[in-house]
Image (tube, rainbow, N blue to C red; front, side):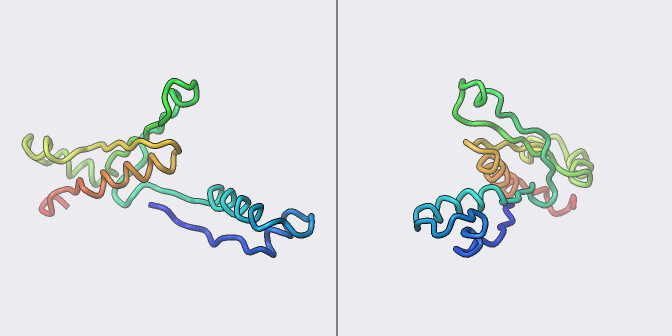
Length: 122
């Protein structure tokens, strides 16, 4: 899930640049960069990040990377108590794909939200 940091004001941008009056477009671009840099993102409740792999993207063999989430300790214990049939319907891991780690984590989080454990196991 994403935790947003408040955006920069024009005055804060001017103080950062220390150059006077940036254009509206420069302010917009700086604000976009600031927001992206300050974006904090974590796995959804009940899940942990297992791995993030952007190696193929880094070597220009793919345009996206992947993030894999695994259930937290309580979720893993509960998952292992499921019947084989339930285990086939309820994943222990979910993955997401995206051009950035943020996009891939958002994608994996969507998958995690549609993969709850049965209520009797929580």
